[in-house]
Image 1 (cartoon, helix red, strand yellow):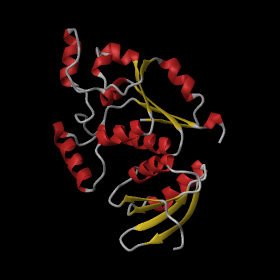
Image 2 (spheres, each protein chain N blue to C red):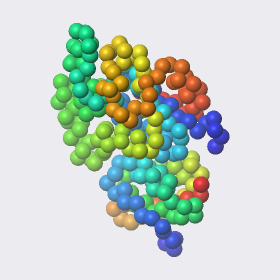
Image 3 (cartoon, rainbow over the protein chains, first blue to last red):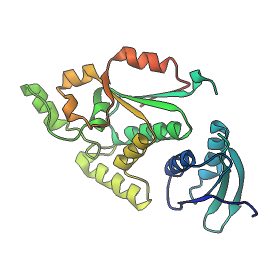
Image 4 (tube, rainbow over the protein chains, first blue to last red):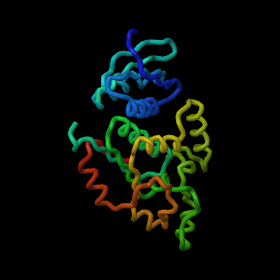
Length: 78
Length: 159
């Protein structure tokens, strides 16, 4: 994946709502245009991370299967 | 998103662990989604905001404080509590599955800016004072405050 990542969030082992809660906290501290990479193995994250982006006006770039967990890429827009 | 649909109001009537857990999960989600989120705790729900000390002034108030002691780590599930065994079991199962504790979840909600408000009448009736509640409670309010914020909220939930 050819995306410049500015911050990585390790949410492996965390259950809903913690991955989203940490994501919101991290995104607040980031600059517009920066990319957050989230590692999560909570199944709900597949739906929740794109839903979070749509609701907050941020951009969901893609997800990537990393074996035991998934990597999600989100760009700060607002 | 317009100003008017960017608020969320969560009314917590119940003092049961499972319902309070759901309430804090929804509140944390709303706050994480960028909504200005307020939780109102009324009646048994006030227990989730208490420090956990014994409360009450008169005989009945003190009895209630003893038999229905507040504090977020003391509340039990709405079903299968069996005098505290159920609470222990749920806590253990949740910890084994690495679900956060109710206290951590409340802290997360506070960190994300969720406003915690407690109902005056419930506190008066049950003889719970402001000093018996955690410091993060922003105010002790009445129904008009709830209605005002609820009327501007796109998300409303009651637990």
